[in-house]
Image 1 (cartoon, helix red, strand yellow):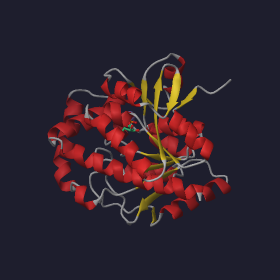
Image 2 (image 1 turned 90 degrees about the horizontal axis):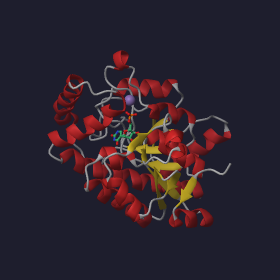
Image 3 (image 1 turned 120 degrees about the vertical axis):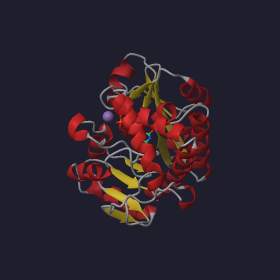
Image 4 (image 1 turned 45 degrees about the vertical axis):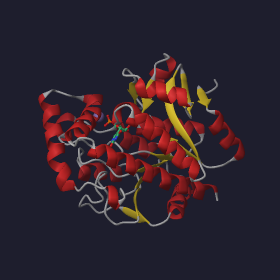
Length: 302
Ligand code: PSU
Ligand code: MN
C-alpha cells in the first residue's frame, strides 16, 4: 500500500533536486506557543532555513495524510485550531487512519521524517524524564524514538521542568548519542548551563554528519540528539527560571494534570509567569537550532 504522505511543492522540488531538507515539528506550534507568536515563529524559522540554503518541511497530520511541508493556509489553520491532537508514536496511525487533525511531537515527527527520507530535524527542546517519574512513570516517548529511528534531532537541550540527570541516563541506557555543539556542558534550554557534563561534544556540523553516517555504516539503529546551547544574548539563567518552574510544577500537581497534558500545561504556565520572557528566549533558540540543522543537512549532502 502506498504511504499516506503528502509533500508540499517546495519539498517535492528539493527531493527531485537532491538538495538539503530540514524537518520541523508542529506540536511546538499548537501546544508549545500561544497564537499568533506560534505561526509567526513557524514562518520565521522556515524563512531562516531557506535563507541558509535548505528547504523546510513542517510536518502535521490533516485529512488522512501525513503532510511533509505545509502551505501557508494549512499552517495558519493549524496554529488557530484549539482542538488539535498532540501525536506521538502511540496515536499517529490512529489519527491518520481516521482523518483527525494532529500535531506531531518530536517522536512522531522523527517517524514521519524518516518515512519521507529526511534525516535532520530542528526543534526547541525534546521531551524527557519528568520530575517524580519514579512515582508517575512519566517518561516522554521522544527518548525511545531517538533510540529507534535514524533522524538527527537538533534542540537546545531539555527544559529544567524535567529531571535532566535521569533524562541523560535513559538516553545513555537506550544507546542514544547526545552531542553538545561547541561546549562541554549539556545545555538546559533557556540556559546554556545545566551543571551536567555532555556525553559527547562536536565543534562542527561536519563532525555531526560524519557520526551519523558511521552509525549507519556500523548498522547501529537509532538517531542522535544534538544539543545546541541558546545564544548567550538570549539566555535566561537557571537561577531565574527555577522558582517559576517549581511553581508551575506545584500547580500541575495540585490540579491533577497528567499524561499528555503535563508538558503543554507547564509550558503555558511558564510563559504566563515570565510574562513572555521565556517565549522570546524560546523563539531565539529555535532559530539557532534551525541554523545548525541546516548546516548538518548540507554537510550530509557534501
Ligand atoms: N519541550 C519543549 N517544547 C515543546 C515540547 C517539549 O521545550 O514544545 C513538545 C515537543 O513536541 C515534545 C513534546 O516532543 O512536547 C513532549 O511531550 P511529552 O512530554 O508529553 O512526551
Ligand atoms: Mn508524558
